[in-house]
Length: 163
Image (cartoon, rainbow, N blue to C red; front, side, top):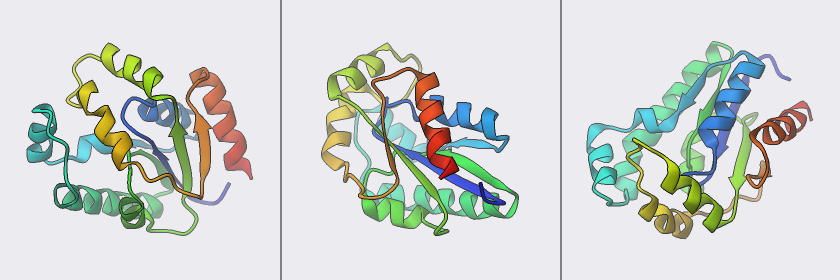
């Protein structure tokens, strides 16, 4: 691995970005940040009401995340869990060419069941279809199936990071 490591875990809501990011953080000894925690109050209120965010809503959020990545690069790296559904969003986050991208992919029905089981999360399961409609699948990074155990997902990700 490089002297510093920036890893971004992407995917629609409910794919396990936080679960994988937390496990990677423990394994690699670098901080984990959940992009959900960087949303301004207005965005959270909108999503809590079942209203999908638009690009204008996301702009300050993505800029804050890019700033956090720059700060983290200077201090040894981090792992960021962020939906980053569109290529334009990923471009804002691409603050360094050495970023490792992990894209979580899974069947809509599996993700739907996971989302319905979540408690106390502002992202409602009913918004999943809007996320799938927005998702622009990248042609770079590592595409990781979520139809396996978190432990297997962690092992596959660590193997990818060694390359």
